[in-house]
Image: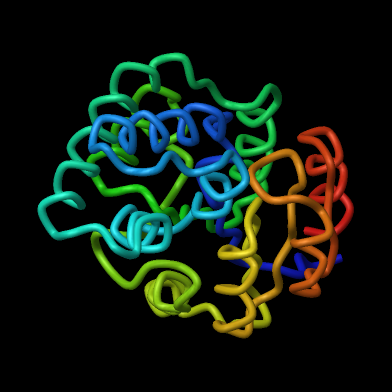
Amino acid sequence: MPNKFDLIVFDWDGTLLDSTGVIVSSLQSAADDAGLTCPSDEDARHVIGLGLNNALEYLFPSASSQQVGLLMDRYFHHYAVNGQRTTLFEGVTEVIENLHTKGLLLAVATGKGRSELDNGFESSGLGQYFQASRCADETFSKPHPAMLLELMAKFDVEPRRALMIGDTTHDLQMAVNAKVAGLGVTYGAHPRESLLSLAPIDCVNSIMELSLWLETNV
């Protein structure tokens, strides 16, 4: 039976990389350093997947441009220190290798900046499997459809032949906006009920479930 999808696009943080906790703590520590009200865990988790500028605008709408600059600087500091603890979710490498073996086009669409993602590709060893990627400092941030539209244009893939996999409503809303199928994963930043509100084709609760779903449906 032919593949249903030609292009599989993954989010990075919270989908492939177990980094939700470190991102939350880094945002909260940055707020403390800047003398601003510390966001709750829920609010900090909500902005994961957005570009950093968009995330800070959401969390600190009254912050001055100087404060935003300080927040960014301190966030990068704390993430650089604590991000060394982040690892891929167990089983992710096997999932990506299996899709690569099938000859599928693989890509990443992330709220990270290019240098951060490239560092993640190198440290994880996954970079060799992805033919393309889009970052928030290169185009519009999620949930704008630009990342998916650009990736589909690069490979001349129609929306019906592309799949977006992510752990946040921003990922799934981007898929909706690009008229692409979305698959939610519930082990990352956003709860299952929030993901289901975007009507994904399915939601999975673990890397094992993700692997089985892809074996059956891709």
